[in-house]
Image (cartoon, rainbow, N blue to C red):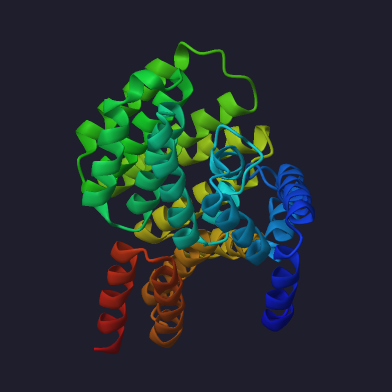
Length: 337
């Protein structure tokens, strides 16, 4: 609605309390069903479902706000808790609504703590820590993840495994690779005790391979890094997880750039960027543009390198990814020198 129309409608609605109560109930239930249909995880071509969430995002924010104001805790948890696979959390991550994600999950965390709902609180702490890690706010991320780990006895083994995995991811950002490996081993040990159904089990294996590959890449162990990313692609393709494929291909392109295999890198980046843009994965789009900047620099095309680096900088900055934004700032200065 237009703002004036909305204000008038809300004024009229307030005059009929019984009707408003029933209308609000239907309103919230309708959006719960809507997110059940179009939310969820990022399987196959996830933009087909997530585009429908984006169309209604402003309305969904109004629903979330109403739930908070009127203490509709169960409904807010349904929208944002990852235990409910039909929520909007994955959409907000991929489409770049990170500040919204942080705001609402923190509100859910506060509500969960007041009620002593520790499983939901742990999941919220995990989600906050993961998002802050991506944004480069590593000290705050560590506080959130450490607190979640201290409460882990209230969480299911699957959530404990996810938490250990996110702590390992944080350790990679911090450059603490040995400790990261310890946390990954802990996550795998926990998960091995659970009967995780397909395709989730294969997805988790692919994620582990991705992180192991990242660690090898950062330590310039390119042979083992390539093996991890190739295996990850096999796993991802076996379960139709397109997002996993383009993440691995992006890293294979970076490996090819580091090795001077520029034609190979070009092919990988062209294909992967198209998929990332089609599916509106804002973080991966920025990373692909970052890789294109380094590729063009290696090819000696500094004007094109600058253009790609500037686009990557803008993408990272919009997401609040501090470390990557600074990296692109340094590259832009280097290209201007």
